Image 1 (cartoon, one colour):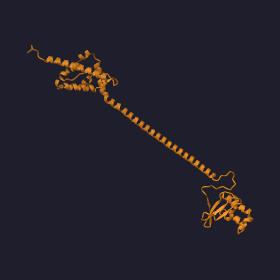
Image 2 (cartoon, rainbow, N blue to C red):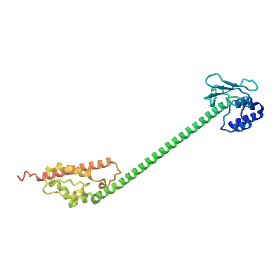
Image 3 (cartoon, rainbow, N blue to C red):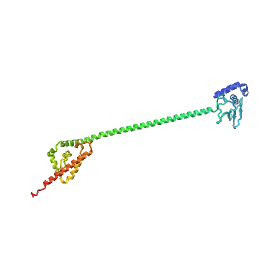
Image 4 (cartoon, one colour):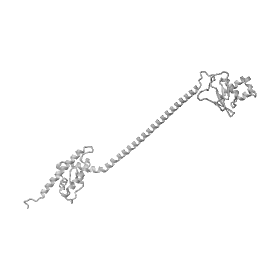
Length: 313
């Protein structure tokens, strides 16, 4: 814009050289060629030419609110003047009214409204700023959402990994425990089951006629060792001591019998772990009661045999 205005001003001076040459002391052509350069400042002659070209007055201020010089156009109008300030006698500065736009007045532009360009630029700048701000906010929201999703995925993956490792540890522990239990109890279970099978395979009469059975039935008078059918396998593996007193240790043997019955595996009675505990308890109670009745009956018969008859006295 500056180069265009300078060119138009110099061309206007050359067309009106007869008038403006009277105000120049040097050769007018040399003056015009020098003023066409962008680094050369203008003076009163150029301001008068521009006032006539654009039909706008030019006011020059120095150190007061009243202009020291005014250049008028060819035709009088009500357009705002071009205002400049002259300081230190070396340079002109532009003076602009911030409350009234005057840029572009006098250029002959059709349907031109002063300040409308500034308003349009301001609206465009605001719209661009809002759009840029909205896009930036949307981008930030997407970044936060992406970070949140990535964090959740990382947490879920970590939890799944820890859960899977814990499950593997539990499975390994469960796999080790049955092996130890089966290794320690295999011999006792086999012995108890074999003894019980031999005992249950015989009829009640064969059990009574068996010498080992008769020894077991007479054992309470001397040793008070309970030979219950359920614990026959374990009792046979532990022979009674010949020096143990009979009646004085009867309660102790009953306690040992109960402890043996409680410690025996259900497989010794032909049961499994999946059967009800009530059935096992009832069977043990009936067997114990039968054994106690039998012991009581045998002890009563032996006591009668030992008592002397009245005839012998």
